[in-house]
Length: 180
Image 1 (tube, rainbow, N blue to C red):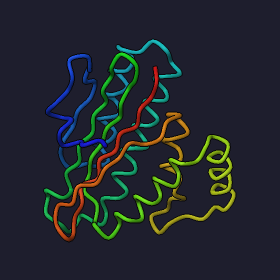
Image 2 (image 1 turned 60 degrees about the horizontal axis):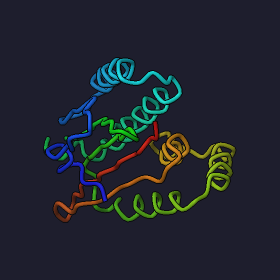
Image 3 (image 1 turned 90 degrees about the horizontal axis):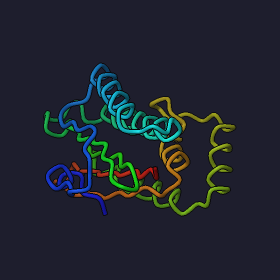
């Protein structure tokens, strides 16, 4: 299980921190983080296919966080804070994020990730195409493809965890691993 809050403090010796941010997310900040990540990846990774995967997954992670923050806008600033990191070790890149969600959304998100994590690549491809063909979008304007996209691009199941904060809020940690 990944714990974003602890990961910031406990990088291992063989891990290289390429990007780290903790605070409130905005549209312009998202763009700045992506520019920094793109520059760092250009300096550390020569394989353009891997760079593109890591970057695209980071985009997806940040978009998911940004779009899911709408429910938290009326809460205090602490519950709007996010954490995001890109870490490289000898075998993988890790896109790690943490953000608050409302406790009422925890069960749905957990079930969705677990369900998609269980699919093999052919089942995932089929479910993804089916969702695209349905063209059904949520009230936030999304078709629910983000989790599937991250798994499809990384080729690995998502590592995640939830930490209960209080009756209203839960801290959601997510790690997407990309082999290099």
